[in-house]
Amino acid sequence: MNPVKNFSSFSFPKNISTLSMGKVGILLGSLAFGQWLLSDVAHIPGGGMGILGITAGLWWFLKSEKVTFNAPTTIQGWISRCYEVLEQFELLEDKNDSLINRRARVNSLEEILDRSDSQRISFASTKDVELPPQQEVTEALSISEPLDISYQSVLPTRDHSWCLPETLVMQDALIYVLPLPLRAADMLWLEKIPENQPAWLMVASDESSCADQLKDLQAQLPQRWSSRVLRWDGSPADMSLVLNPVRRLLAQSKTNMDATKQRLLARLHSSWQSDLETLRRDKFKNIQNRSQWIVAGAVFTSPIPSADLLSVAVVNGLMIKEMSNIWSCKMSPELLNTVARKLASAAVAQGVVEWSGQAILGFAKLHGGSWLAAGSMQALSAAYLTRVVGSSMADWMAINNGVSELDLELLDQQASRLVAAAAKKERVDWIGFLSQGKSWIEDQVKEANLNKKILEA
Figure 1 (cartoon, rainbow, N blue to C red):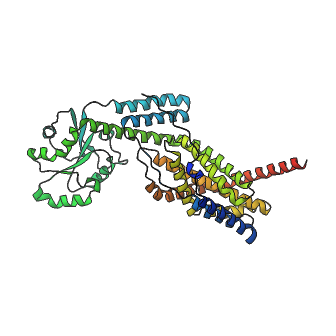
Figure 2: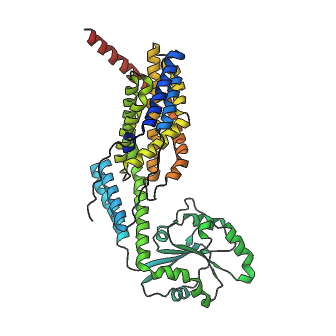
Figure 3: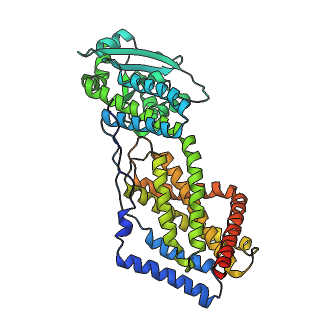
């Protein structure tokens, strides 16, 4: 196999550096206004009003634009992507485990690539459903290219996993024979047939006696199957006519087999991505903890507390850069930045900043003067925002770092759900977060006092 090319390193998103002067002005104005309200009007050093100013600027600052992502469209492209994943396993796994597991993974990859020159088509059904005579099918599908036809009437009507057998997934084409009336078990199996696998439904029916059943069947089937029902009247003469659409597909053998290889490679890649998640989450946890306290430090020491948004944006950018390495993302920096900004916007819209600020306020008041309470509240609130955005970004990468073309319109719908799930997950360990925050604040105070003594000396 050809070695996988190394992609260029992550750079800070260009679109932040090219923000219009109007946006920058609105951002800085909202921050200054929030600080003015905080200090001069409300006489509250660094409370919820300051965070409200941050929110107003953040909402405008995080407006995003469209970015597209190109998934592999060739077999070689998917092979390269699979080898990138193998390299990622080597980076994350222990050396001994990586050597053993790599051989098994390479064998799975080669099994797909070394498929025979014969196309494979299978007739499948649940138990006790009669399949059409194999001799009639063979004659009806007579083509010049090699063709392997298999019969698998082995699908159970009750199953715990409802996982389609691997032998059916590997087929170049699949014909599922349905009984009439349609059963719930068959509907569940139809949902498991891959969307990108060529497949048809066959029903044996006498039009005079089963017209109503056929009408009911069409009404119950998902849109995918509406034009893919093969109605066979049971006669040998009708079989050739019924299987015409299938025969046309099989006549394009190379195109069909290449499409199958791409589908199977994409599926293998997706399963490997799933296997990587445990390893990735462990690595991400360390980055998340480090990043949130870097943000907290920048906010805590900022001479203008409300201006800490810029520190949050920069540190989150660095965190996302490390995350992109962990998840082996081929996506452009612009796309990652767009996704992160959409998730951050959703976090602000859902009140993550306000909620954390209010929850921290009571905690912060237990630690001395008002300057410490205000600084603590802003620092921990910024750290929590970083934590939630990072967690939702990790969830998004886990979902979308698979085989399908990324859809930013879908992301608009997913963002709120991802942020809500991340916030809920992080709140489970809220006491632990505050405990870490207390230790961090005490360290900051000790460091500040030490520096003061050094200067006085």
